Image (cartoon, rainbow, N blue to C red; front, top):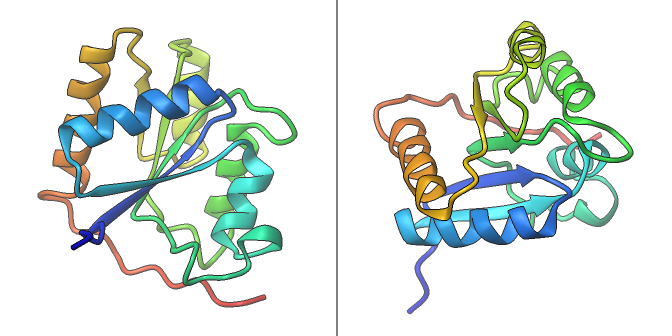
Length: 153
């Protein structure tokens, strides 16, 4: 029997290797957490608002948590975060910036834009597993998340 993921993370990251590493790390730290992927800010907003190839809301459920890379093509993470926080149906979604950057200017800017957390991606897989394990334990443990319903546009 297939287990249905109780919680779902949406990773916005254009690096296919990072997507695979995150998928594998999440499977190792908590196999019950589902993960979906988009490759840029435009796809992220399309997914969240069920537009384009993400039209079917049943196949593309609203995530419980977004992991957001900053540097992506077409629309970067900063602009996507700005749009998420400005949208009345999306603004409550928890967004954790998950990027290779550790620049103070990036940290300050994304918190000003409404990020819930800023995490620099670990380079080593075992640290990635520990980091994502802590993220999952925190966001899907003691944190009470609001229900989010995206209305059709």
